[in-house]
Image 1 (cartoon, rainbow, N blue to C red):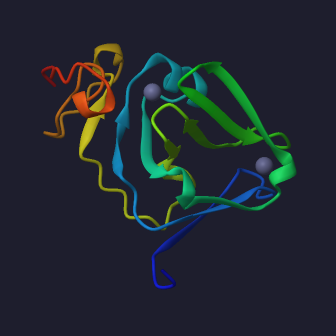
Image 2 (tube, rainbow, N blue to C red):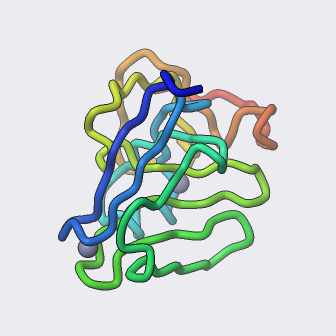
Image 3 (cartoon, rainbow, N blue to C red):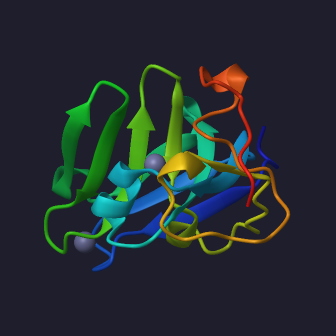
Length: 144
Ligand SMILES: [Zn+2]
Ligand SMILES: [Zn+2]
């Protein structure tokens, strides 16, 4: 356990620091409206981790949460507004935004919620209409 990989991340101002340990269970892009509105970007590059892999190492008292739906608890720094992660309690995983942990080699394997896209990406990866079946979705694929 001591030799497992770890990746450090921080908010925009640096007051909140996190560390994720081990390897992500999935990496990809989410095109949903919620990710777009929350991130103010066209798509969200996500990395999913088991809940035990994610640790707040500094400034946890400055971490705020916003929960709009049952599926997502979005965490950010109250000082700078910088986003850190989204907990998905129903699925038992946490999305640490790829941009927050730059030392992790981001290797996406899928796109999810492509039905809601405003930004088509022709990278040859599978484009799920919503989610893969094993994550509770339809598993249906859409053209790029
Ligand atoms: Zn901050
Ligand atoms: Zn999303």
